[in-house]
Each structure stands twice: as structure tokens, then as C-alpha cells.
Amino acid sequence: MNILDIIEKKKHAKELSENDIKYFVENYVNGNIPDYQISALLMAIYFNKLSINETYFLTKTMIDSGETIKLNSVHGIKVDKHSTGGVGDSVTLVLGPLMASVGLVFTKMSGRGLGHTGGTLDKLESIPGFNINLTDDEFINNLNKSNISIIGQTANIVPADKLLYALRDATSTVDNISLISSSILSKKFALANDALVLDVKVGNGAFMKDVEAALELSEMMVSLGKKFGRNTKAIITNMNEPLGKAVGNSLEVIEAIETLNGNGPKDLEEISIVIGSKLMHMAGITKNEEEAKNILYKNLNNGKALSKFKEMVELQGGDVTYVDNTDKFKLSKIQKNILSSEEGYVEEIDALQIGISSRDLGAGRLTKEDSLDLGAGLILNKKIGDYVNKGDILATIYTNKEDVVDDVSHKITQAFSFTRDKVTYDLILKEID
Ligand code: URA
Image 1 (cartoon, helix red, strand yellow):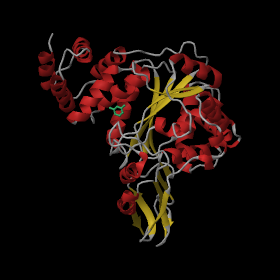
Image 2 (cartoon, helix red, strand yellow):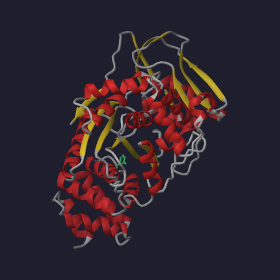
Image 3 (cartoon, helix red, strand yellow):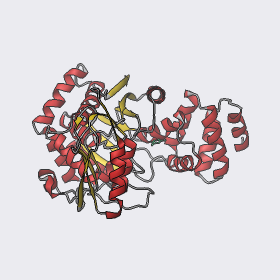
Image 4 (tube, helix red, strand yellow):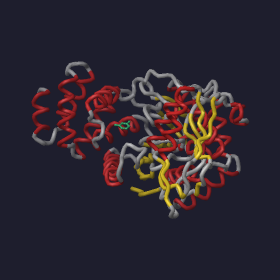
């Protein structure tokens, strides 16, 4: 077997065997096959696609390229969620404590933000002292103590994905359903969870721009879950405007705390409750999702979910006084309201432009090495369906970078479009069981 035969096979749209897939992944990770040959293979895969079996073997080989975390010593039913990435998406910060509050164990390895999307790790680090780098033992101890821990992906998890993802990024081969599915699920399944819900975002602020593509990706991932014997479901949610009102790290943590206090934006609350109710039903602790939703709404209003958030912050070294008093978060110095020059119902808020604006204000990164201003970002004062008069505040921006204010103000104004007619917005577009 050699890499040229494998490239040739895929070039002619033939099915790769398990051995072919093992051969190219293992030898690429070991440094025996150069980038240019794997680049050619990725492009052949991009055009000729992988079958579900090939995708399964690719995912399996990627998991086997690194360490897996068994979690045998963690007591209870372990649940996890994954979002394909959006703007203002702080669901993990609300859902995790909710799951812990009903006795499920929320075991999560999260990522950092890149480009226009935010990352849970950056958000959590806006709480002074919060440590996302726990050892496996610390992670497991915290899970046993409080049912929740959110940490960064350890270096030894799925090394094949780190290499392949970087190469896909550099060769324009990211947006292939099989490559995305194997990349996401290899990282999820390296951790031994009992139930997983995938939140596949669709819309102007998401990776997937149309529902058909999102459906194809969701069905592929749910089918792969079945092949791995893992309880996996997916929902497709609308990212044609940012989720919630806050975009930016400290700002999103404050909003998540408000949501855990029962005072958050309804869209962020709804997605957290829908995913949570699925996980509870999948874990077998409620008869149906409706029963689960009632329990979850209660726990948002009786302080139980918030107290789990505080436990997690404390166990991971964070300053809990910030949770009790969110005025302590240090927001960026320049704060400016963006006013509307138009009137009408908000028809669309270009989430991509809002994400880029937040990044430019200092809340995001262009490259992995960029440092963040954790107090930067923006708060949307109007959402789709709201009526706006001329002069109303559309958003408030927070930054320490004077030179970006004019450009970002223009971008945000442009991100809003208006209509004379009433507008409705469907948040949950499909559920794939
Ligand atoms: N997120 C991932 O982890 N991998 C992809 O390929 C795309 C999104």
C-alpha cells in the first residue's frame, strides 16, 4: 500500500478501505507522508466525498491517534453537547449548570474562539482565576464533587485532527460533511459520555448557510453516533441573528449568569432548555422531553442551576464574587451607543458582521496568537421582530481601541435590515433523533 494508490482511488471516486484510511492517517501523524500528498487526497475527498463507512473508519482512526478519557471513575450519567459555532452562543454556560442541577454529569472539553465566533474557554477566563487547564484527575474529581467541569482539550486528544484541520484550513477543504463530522465527533467520542446533543447552526453567522446542508451534516453525525453505539441527537438552530443580546467574553458570561437567574434573553434560554430536555430524556431520567423542560425552567428560577455554576467556578479557582456581583467584571473603557437612522421592524441582523465587529472591538482573534480584550464586545438592544424608531439605540459597543469605533459603528448599522411588515423568527428549525 502507498499513498499514491490511495489518492488515485479517491480521485476516481472509489471507496477507501479501513486499511487505506488507517494507512494515510497514521503515516501523516507520524510524519511519513508530506502535507502536499494529504492535501491532494483531501481535495479528492472534497469532490468525491466519503461514504458513511469511510467516514466511520476515518473518525475511528482519528480517535485512535491519541488518548481517550474513559471516565469510568465518574459516578452518574455523563452528558455533553456541541455547537458548530455561532455568534453570542453561550449555551454551554447555561446548559452545563442546568444539567448538573438535575443530577446529570456535564463533562465538557471546549474550545477557544477564532474568527467571528467566540469560544467557551475565553468566556470562562473572563472570571479572574478560572483555570481551564485541569489534569485528568482534577477533572474527574471535580465531576464527582459537583457534576460539572468545563476544560480545554488536552494536548493528547485526537492529534490527527489538529494536523488535518490545519491543513484543511490552508487548502480550502474545511466544508465537507464527512471531514467536518469526523473532526467534531472524534473529539467528542474521545471522551466517554453517555449522551450527546449536537447544535448545528445554520444562517448568515454559521458555517452552514442553508438548512439542507445542515440537515445533511446532522444526519451524518447522528448516523455515525449510532455506528459508534453512542446516544447522539442533533438540532438545527437559526443563526440569522446572534443568540442572546451579548457578544463578547465578559459580556456573555454576565448574560449567562442573568439567564441562570431566570432573567436571560428568551432565545438563549430556549435553546439551553431544548438541548437540556433532550439530554435528560436520553439519559432516561424523565418520561419525555416536556417533563424535563418543566424541571429545567424551575431550576433556572429557584437558584439551583446558578449554584452549580458557582460550584464550578469555585472548584476551578475562579472568583465567585464576580458571579454574585456582575458589576465587578471590568468592561472596556470606550462605550458608545449605535443609533438607528431608519425605522421599521428588524428583519435581519447579519450575525457574521456582528461577530466580525465584536472581533474588531477586541473580543476575538484573527490568528491563534492574538490576545483578547475580555471586556470588549457589544450588546444588541434590538433583535429580529422588534420595532425601531429613528434615533433608537441598536447596540452598545465596548472597546479599548479608539481607532476601530467608526468602522465598527458603520458595520453594525449595516448589519441591521428593516421592513414595514411584522417579522417572525423560528429559532429551532429541526430536531434529528
Ligand atoms: N469544528 C470542528 O471541530 N471541526 C470542523 O471540521 C468544523 C468545525
